[in-house]
Amino acid sequence: WRTNPFSESVDELRDRVKGVSAKPFMETQPMLDALHCDIGNATEFYKIFQDEIGEVYQKVNPSREERRSWRAALDKQLRKKMKLKPVMRMNGNYARRLMTLEAVEVVCELVPSEERREALRELMRLYLQMRPVWRATCPAKECPDQLCRYSFNSQHFADLLSSTFKYRYN
Image 1 (cartoon, one colour):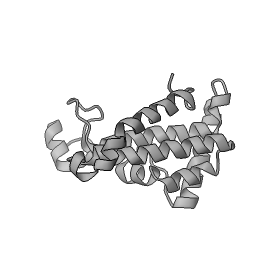
Image 2 (cartoon, one colour):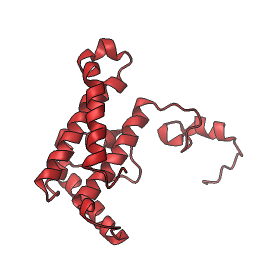
Image 3 (cartoon, one colour):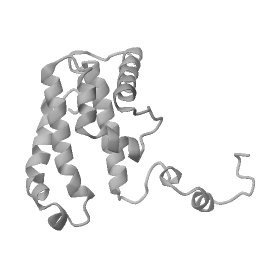
């Protein structure tokens, strides 16, 4: 029953099921709506969280099993403290809950080094200050303060990624 019995075209099928997950995995137009921006960013932060739990910045090529155990620890912690169930593929609701200061605090409980915890908090703080700007239809009207700080924040964000998190972004 999953084999397209009526031989519908891709567009007909997509129209029938609708929704985000029905869209092709790779977008052909070079556009990224705010939802997919959130999803992409959350996916990246989710990976950073795992790496920080496993202290990747000190290690060389951790094994698959090690990585799996960090992911399990992260999922377990998020489920226990935030009632956030693990998802197979990042979705908008999960992304919005993950990208909060509350979530960072929960993750920080698993990060051994205070210095790294502070860096994660700072990364999320900057992200949350920048987010309204690209979520807004007209940032100059809707969030002028964040827009003024945007350039500084994004520079600081980039500096943080290229220094503290350089194991991930060289």
